[in-house]
Image (cartoon, rainbow, N blue to C red; front, side, top):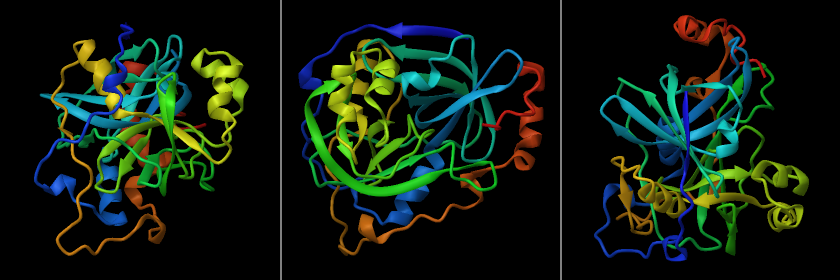
Length: 310
């Protein structure tokens, strides 16, 4: 598997793009929790790392952000795919597994791009770049590795609001929010209330400063800026990602908008605190359901019977 490191180029002016005047489109309109969850369900990725024997080494989450012919592009955290000698598979919402053909990690931000072959009807999520503000409603989607009594995995979709925006990012992390998160949701989606991707999640509420320091390869003092804020979770703004991707020549056909969420004509929407997500079959991974798909990968990865055993 080819792995590359993106160049370290950055301009503070790219951190948040100014909103461009435009008429509200369907993608700009504020939506209900169930409608946003439907968008998120279709575009949240489960990323699994395998060793040379086909044994699972861990997992993380990601977002489907572009498609170029039969190549799909996902974004996740660098620490999700920073596993020496590992090969990766992506599970999409239709329960299909796809071999990751390329991984490209950023040098100074906890971000990575994964490419995989796809031939189904996969529609990437819209990316929204504008100035994020404390108090703004956001939703988070990802695949935690614990809490499922069946022993499998269940995608979680939680609501909350932006709690802080740091003046200076730490390894790209700048946006804090109150959503409930757990281990395994790293690389997951942070969506605004129009259902557009605004940040990539990566650090949860229970993170210890020493763990954060080791993961991000920074000093404990630097990591403390993030870890000390108990009750907060952190993500990397999509504008940071887009700036780096452009500088690195990763010019995939992203669906990018620059407007803030716009009120619908009726004005009747479900606010974040009013919605409780109930996972359905597409949000669950069990060994029996995945057996057929896993067997299709035997020739490529060897024995993968325990692919989803964590």
